Length: 114
Length: 115
Image 1 (tube, rainbow over the protein chains, first blue to last red):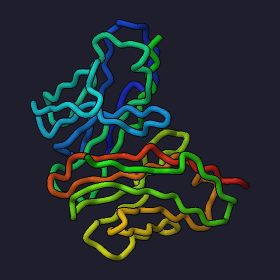
Image 2: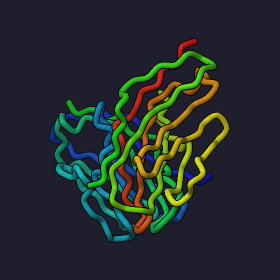
Image 3: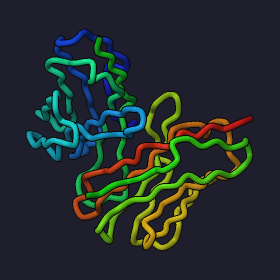
Image 4: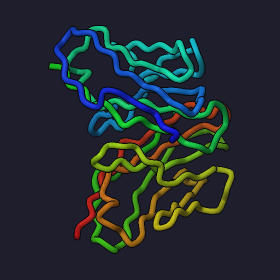
């Protein structure tokens, strides 16, 4: 089954404790992206990657890191989480280039930083 | 800058009735794609319908259809014969066609279906 697998589904952590949210896709998509969803703000892009070793900042990159060492994986790293990073996070992937196809999304990670 | 506006934070509809969710966007591009995504309480993002800007015909998927007005930069979603399972957050999204990479999302409309 074509899918984006995102883990964990829920995560509660304390301020300053490094964490990683994993994302993996099995569709050979070049393009992968991370979003955060907050009430009234919709989905805002954090980082994206167009291929292995190619990453770039989205609209809200502060406090986040990503890496793309393999085509299928695109982890999101919070090196020193803060309470304002409490949010719902989505990983998404798609084909690169002009395409009528939308994103395939992961199932989301609800992160709470206390 | 590309922006997507959903002016209705919340909507409600009676079961079996029809509801229209509005979406406007701002772009200088002539070729692009538009999408509606549904996010039920399970929070999974589900693609409902898509529209290519170069197509004049409005897209339809079963009970879901769009009213695409390119000149007005409007892309509304009509849900006919609303069902309880349609209750969800709905996001409108825009995507360039030249690179096809960047998506822009609206802030969402929360739809309640009243039995």
